[in-house]
Length: 320
Ligand SMILES: [Zn+2]
Image (cartoon, rainbow, N blue to C red; front, side):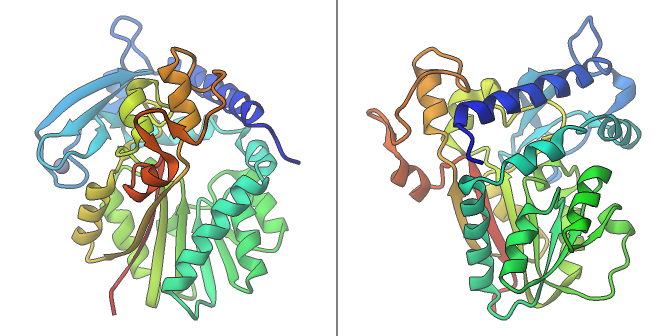
């Protein structure tokens, strides 16, 4: 059933609020920041520089910008023990939301991604989706006769996807022993949650078959929405989105992992959200109806041509 954008945003806000309540127990009420015992500081996840500028704090977390490579990242981040505890107590409602998200908007987004990976890996036989949730994306891949594999940590979502006939694993990627390699590995809105992106990208590369490709959809710190809204932008949640790559920083990370960028584009303009904000309204619940252009600034086509859309879709592999 199609939902209105407003309904979808209201649902998201509800999840956001619940997630923020879950944040609170980790926060020092005097400083408004996460308590030291839950966190660790780190170097830039892309270039390893220790030099950074603080940009803003939000919901207990502090985002910084690397002075050397411009990477935007959360610093400090939760330590391993705290992050496991956090994810175990959160996200119970997520499965329901994702399942109700099976409207044309997501179908188009997912099919667009599939088109692009199949363009780069023409004879793909199988696909692994990491963080596959309840398997909506894998359903579409299966329709294209791909053998579908998924990894999902959330038990409910894992069960749901498994019951639909996908080969799903309920464990951390690095704990799974696969019998085969993969022609396509995808991560939809997952990679920004991973603290050590370099380790993961190299790990995924090892799971690829010859000429296999990796697809990432990630929120873009180079998006106009993020740059205009800054801390008001939902991209910055203070805890889960630990690494916010932009066009150049994702390219740098790929290079570090000996991967080539085979295809890069942006999707989702967020022009409506920006127009709300520019009209002094709540960016996510405001009344702006214009989603085509930001008057006197930019239209949707140009926004995506210049890679300033809200999310980056990147296809990585080794050039032949
Ligand atoms: Zn850096």
